[in-house]
Length: 87
Image 1 (tube, rainbow, N blue to C red):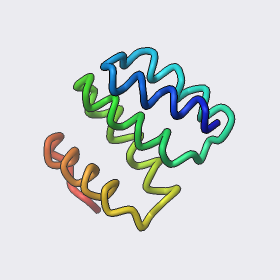
Image 2 (cartoon, rainbow, N blue to C red; image 1 turned 90 degrees about the vertical axis):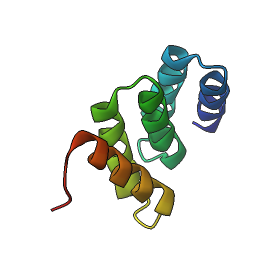
Image 3 (cartoon, one colour; image 1 turned 60 degrees about the horizontal axis):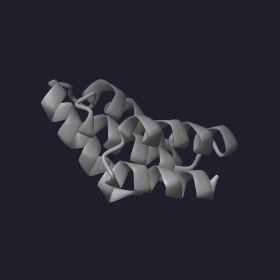
Image 4 (cartoon, helix red, strand yellow; image 1 turned 135 degrees about the horizontal axis):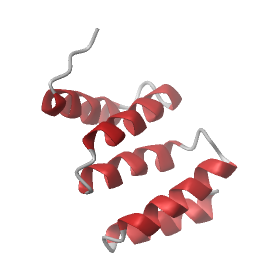
């Protein structure tokens, strides 16, 4: 799983979002709770301006690592942009 995730990171850095998502999918197929892949998926979706999909990815990442402050910050910012509120 980690090899796929590293390759996804490189593709993200090269602004190749579609291929990054394909590699993230491979990562998650092998390790569905891979925090880096879930978080990375959110970042890719933000870059693609697919904010609803980014929100879903970060919510999944938060379930894997509830103490992560970066994930909480991304969720808060996305919810603000999308006009949502925490319950």
